[in-house]
Image (cartoon, rainbow, N blue to C red; front, side, top):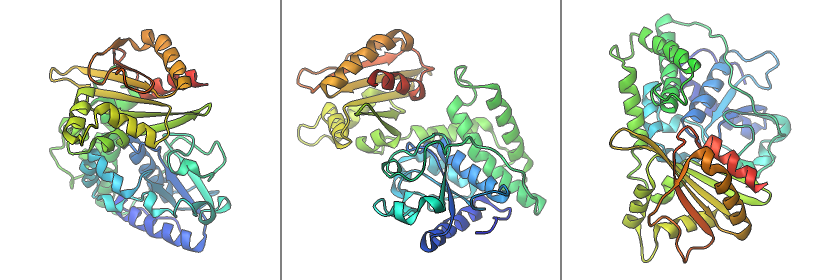
Length: 378
């Protein structure tokens, strides 16, 4: 593989997808950049931009000169991420341009086709292969690295400005979504503000982008798309942003959802066939994944503009129940957990132990809550 010359993201992805097919067929060296299994906006943009920039100026000792970004989901699951579908056109991209798990060899042969000595995995936004790829021992521990940047080489100035503006919009969207358009006191840092200013300047410098570009309008567009999950089935909503861990032989799964529990309950009613209830739907979801502990974390804005979080926790075995109770006892104060009542709450006929809370500590996302749960499982 040769170094990829300065070009658009779209041309880069077309070239990278073709090069991946060739490397697989010929058993050539290949460097793959991949985000975490939830494949959220952070992971998409981080893996794509890291590979794009690194491929233009790879280090002299690079394992292979081309860095290939992989979205850690099947191609069909891109439709579960409406924020992707809204953002990609801003970079002159469509879903079919992305490289997904479908572009890799089948799971039962991937270890033989992408042999360790010919394959380097660069993990961004996580430090261990997760999801489907986590079932195969493809790399040694410790291959995760933080994203960096490389110098750019210039072609036609106007063309480079356009390519920069397209890439900048991908990165800016991730920052704005993560910080609620730089308004979240808990999440917004000085780095976010500085990076957003830099990226906006890149966008505004380009004559070929919208001269009336507005950060607020851009955020509203992407955020509205992210919240628009009403067309999705309940099972798809639960697996859209899902992560799973195994601690001490107990499997924990956590779904993050951008709507309240009442919305999910109503969705279950709309889809219900026979006697399948919301609790039954959650039970099926957990059983399919062989979970002993399952949680749903909701994060949403009320009609009055108030940001809220909820947490539903279900322990489906005796040992998981002891762990869940220990978590509830220790986390109630730190997370400011206030019990909720409703049909999604504890039912007498339900297996195991279940609680639902309003989470007063809205600064604590899954990144903070998951480690607290996992600590009680060890």
